[in-house]
Length: 316
Image 1: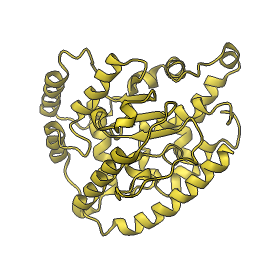
Image 2: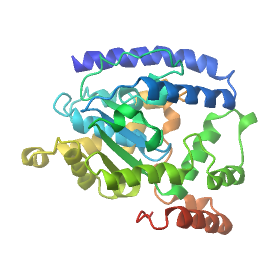
Image 3: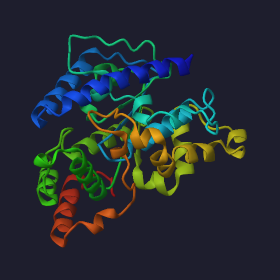
Image 4: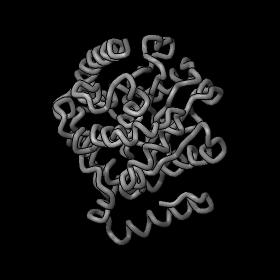
């Protein structure tokens, strides 16, 4: 039943995105921003959270594509065996399986109430929306939120490459221009520091509701972090599962190399607004920023991070 429902959702989204891609070329960045705002307002007005919902959150290019896959594989492991050859993650991008509120579910028409009843529970959703701006139903429910953040240096470089790839040549901008905007806090989803700190503070205040992960720690010790995620989501791995290699199977299934080489991620239709799946995978490396930053850029961003995160006990 779960597989049938998910397949229907994926096919529906594919049809929607084919139409969106045809219309995207005619939209300016201002119009795209307007669509995001409308979709966010629609989400805030209409989304009704269930107590067993799971929300995967982050800033763009901070590991959410990976975390969505991991969360789905962990939560649905009894329905879809991670080592099976027909696992949904082998045939679908993780963004189609774990849809975004602001991209996939709410299209900006705030008078439309979306029917999410066909999604099997526990439902898993994704978002880049800041914590304070999530719908009241999420704040007032017992749903779980997992937020992943990344070293702002690497996150910036990944984001810059991403936009440089997907934007028309007439709309591209230099590394230096993008860097100034980044340091000023100009971003679709708010300044990077406020987005991260919103979830960080929530994780400290309500640790049973919000779990904050660091991309670098997830990559360095994936096995340990997966057990933390499963425990947080109230579906811990049993001793039999651990000894039977279930965690290792999930790590392999969701590895960057594995996902990047899948046909769906080489040529599939994008499930992130107007973007082809192939553009979601570049390097996934830690420390790539050193190949792009000048000494003055390093000094400036370091000062921004020190100023904004000072006293928070959150470091990168």
